[in-house]
Amino acid sequence: MPFSPTKRKRHQRRKPKEMVLNITSMIDVFTILLVFLLKSYSSEGHLVNIAKEIRLPVSTAEQVIHPAVNVAFNGASVFLEGGLLIDDVAPYLAAEEMLIEPLYEALRGLAARSKEIAEVNPAVVFTGEIVLQGDREIPFRLLKKVIYTAGQAEYVNQSLAVFQE
Image 1 (tube, rainbow, N blue to C red):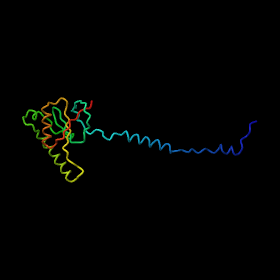
Image 2 (image 1 turned 90 degrees about the horizontal axis):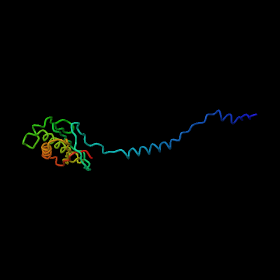
Image 3 (image 1 turned 60 degrees about the horizontal axis):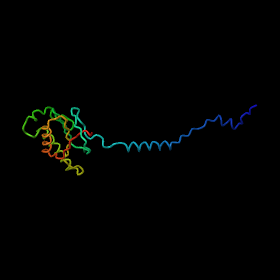
Image 4 (image 1 turned 90 degrees about the vertical axis):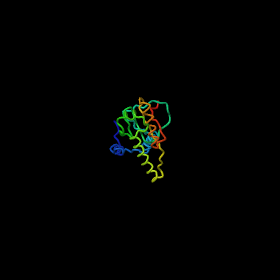
């Protein structure tokens, strides 16, 4: 005959065991995940928005561009800071004059505004940096005119945006 359980054993069996969750190890895991994600997060990101109409040339350049004024252009139009500035560049290509007047006026206005901010805020310095995004099939004459116009508008630190190979 089997033995019957004692009162103490019977009482222990009826009482449900309490579950204890040790969250210390879980906090350790989340901390490690958080540190990993913060270390792998790239703060540089994309500094230049490329217009859909522009296909940048491919290069092996390794220099990183800095935030600056963006001028994008293809064989048909010129964009300044993501907005359309000139919708037809054909008259400017045909003209003998090197200066593209609408681009010059817009860049001069941006430079004046940056200089005004620099006078009020000593942390801001006008460096004259500009990023030129030219389509890979633009005429060289247009590139030359855009570079000349940017230089005349006091944007002398010019960078050409390319796709890194």
